[in-house]
Image 1 (cartoon, rainbow, N blue to C red):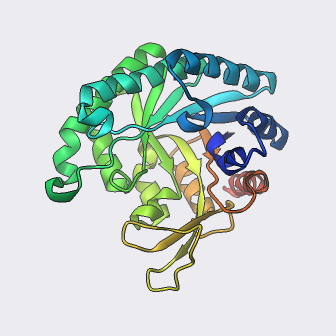
Image 2 (image 1 turned 30 degrees about the vertical axis):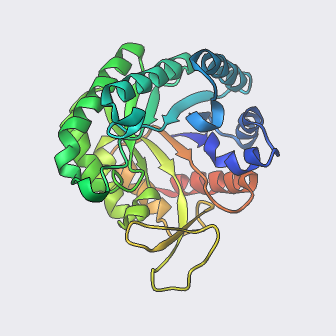
Length: 291
């Protein structure tokens, strides 16, 4: 098992000016991670040439700390992105593939869509053909660059395990797999362990994440919480402090043969440096205790 950390985990400290993204790379090495995960809005800004320079800077910073770049995470929406022009959105995502290759990242995660809402709402199933075609085109391009592509259970519309499994099956490309975020299934009101069991055979990369959970009928916890698809309350927290059965999810993945890279994605209100440090210690402990 190799351990990575999404640099998004430090985002609150970056926004406050307490750390720079490159400081976070040094923190990851200090805590004993093997790699870091780059994120579009955390590590990049400007035009393509500027982003190329930033990619090379991040790659060198990681190498100086003895760390790999485990993945690049980018936003995408093949239905609504680029003012609804699917072909332009595909080309935009391909540019991110080029940056992933420049980073030396072996894989890249991209979103799928927020869906079609309102008066023109459509079901997930009805949209699978056009989505699968777009995803397959990106996967084929990325294969030529040595970058595997993935989607994550993320963003409400393409979040629950039957949907991402359905998309994976429809794409049917050897260079495309799933990023299994064990915490995000709660956003779609799924039991994380059951959901992980469904997607484990297709999983190429893992996000370890924990949430606190309260029923819709509980008192509103206020600032820091958000709603699941059906209106329950969620708040990010340190791995091991919340309601996600992290150790059980790890056991399911191990039984399915997964022994790749697992990345912490911390979204809690706790100070991120401590949240990440404690989360890694717990994650390593849980994995070591599995039979």
